Length: 479
Ligand code: GLU
Figure (cartoon, rainbow, N blue to C red):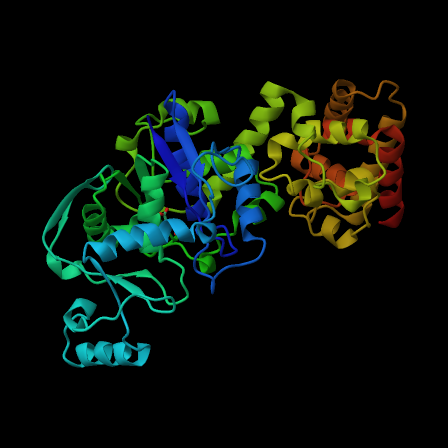
């Protein structure tokens, strides 16, 4: 039986790294026939608690298709799934430690603790609270922090990703188990919860490795079996060897969603950020990831975050959905991403626009910036036309003449299809002796005044005869 958990703190912003810590536990649980993934909200740090953050976590997981078997909304036999509602449970476990002489109420005022800390830094020795452990400790009462009584020793342990690790006594301390406010610390609460919830694999960021000896000491003191420990590699900033932070341009997951990144692409990208299956494959569906995932292929070194790669992958996914699931499938994802000018336009027409532009999109929000001219006449920008690198060499009268010849030929065209439009364009090239880059840039700009558009014959087919001719005429008469 494999039981994994995702245990985020509701502090507001859902970072890329937080989400990856949900993906791997999800994949491992789904891969096992009777696997289970638990969502647990670690909300005991009341100072960092942000209203609405839990809903944001739930929405993000739902958007990515990472459903959980136990947790908020769905419930389950091991609830409550909010740590703030589990205080009785922590108290019971804490009492066990008190009774066994492995925890003590600490009456030392915070100012005194600061003083100890200062002394240590002046003497250039590491601060360990156990060196200042009070001799007399009162009976534990609310309002007083409860500390673990460390019995430091060497620890060795196996991390499924990092391999065999060890640490000496110098890293173990009298850590706080229950804070002054009555809430447990993460250090204590997660040990209790993982045990109570039957978690078999503790998968979390590598930043917890340094605290692991303290956790091992707690497992021992509480008589608990160690779960498997799986430390996920850091996600590094695009440049340099530091951890990815908000300032490195990485947005929250919901911002990526609002920018038109598909959940398939986000999942695919994040799953492969620190894991690979040993092949060259880059595009994976959720089912493929579930089948291929394995702990022993999670890399131990940090994984560099690369937004360009994410955008590339999103482009691949946009194409894949259109090509394999059909135009309607992609179209159904485009709601909210069209420019304002498309507001009253039929779905049928928008679908046509999508069909000629989808293979150039990196995100769905590119629709907003790249398709406006399909829905409303562009503002004529003669400078853009005259300064174009292919058109600069031609005189204004030459440009006007070329446009007029194009208009005359197109006006005679009865069947306005991509193929016959291509024939007309080819015939115009032959007749005028111009290079495709010249003639086609001229027509393309006159129709769109956009830096880019799909193939000219396709663009004209979608715009229709009347609109195309009207736009070409308008430009011809303003040169
Ligand atoms: N609540 C912790 C965090 O958000 C979770 C660490 C863990 O998964 O145990 O960092």
